[in-house]
Image 1 (cartoon, rainbow, N blue to C red):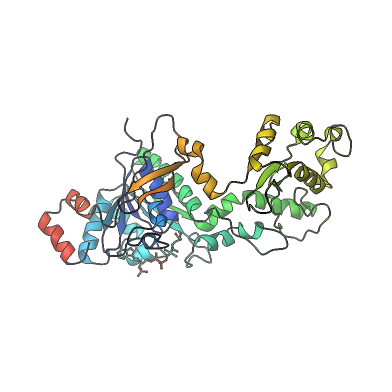
Image 2 (cartoon, protein in one colour; image 1 turned 30 degrees about the horizontal axis):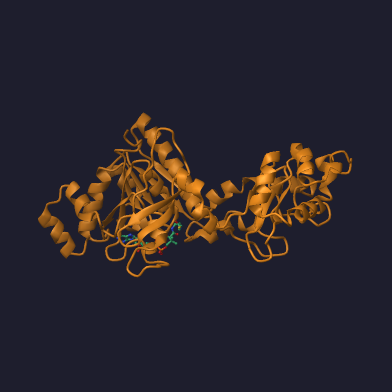
Length: 416
Ligand code: COA
């Protein structure tokens, strides 16, 4: 069976993480993604944080699989000519240059639309068009601070904290992929391309939706009952950092298990789901709490929720995180061990499902990557190695109709 995006040609002008994460996913789904890179150096992540001399860094290989690489200096006349030809026969151009770079290159939206009215031009920027910060260059943590994630993450007595998850980068790329697929569907109805834009600030904010919910509740009533500050602490007029509190109506916390003194990840996340109160009492050996009015309702438990967590921690003291979860799962209690990257890398279930994949690479030997988190019943996703710099330059140029002599001339002129 063919891949769903087969026949869709994408000019991939992306670099670092936000754009590459988007185009990599589209390549997995079958698009022909041609990564356009500056001759000599390519995407800056090829050489950032290398662990094998002269081999592409994992930062690059893990975000650029299944693509082809074309080196092209788009600031030379030949480079511009090649890009013009490519635009005429492609479906999508994706870029995450700094603000204005594509216009300065001579390939603004009007020009591209004129060359190919069906073309979809998809961009990631730090801030949206017209925003008072639209001129700023932005990286991951900048976006997390600008989008509300940092001010609401961490502990109340510590500074704003960024997440280890790439909420600014890969998350923005995933939003952009949805936008591109939507524009492709619309093009099939109208024949027209369009601009698709996602700002990193907006993509982070979209994931902080519940914190905007909390801001409005706070303004209305002056407190947030699911935060650790309630009822014994203080609220100001902004959503506070809530540590590890559950974000919805179910209180939860990260709890210590056997070995926490030496293992930084010997913890579980434990959720006190309202309707699971009786099984929780049975599981932790506190059957008397099932009928004690001081504990039977969520509201009654609220002012002593940390005492309850302390009691659960006492129960956990002689159990590893895995043993604890194995007991709690029998009672249908939402919980999970806190898993380290090492544990995830070695997890057999993740290997079996294709969520962690071992990829062969000509210079690295092999490396692990995160496979598609989206599983299809009718699509098998094969993760191929990322391309070497310029690996497909001649092949792409020949496909555009250039002769061997013309290709050699372009190499000579350092246009490719
Ligand atoms: N040939 C010739 N020139 C090329 C080229 C090519 N193949 N590819 C890129 N360039 C040029 C661009 O034209 C631009 O030149 P100009 O500034 O003279 O117009 C330059 O290289 C790239 O600029 P820029 O994208 O601003 O790179 P940077 O390293 O200064 O900034 C970012 C990096 C990530 C901060 C910036 O690209 C950015 O803010 N992007 C938008 C948000 C984003 O995606 N952030 C990163 C998420 S991981």
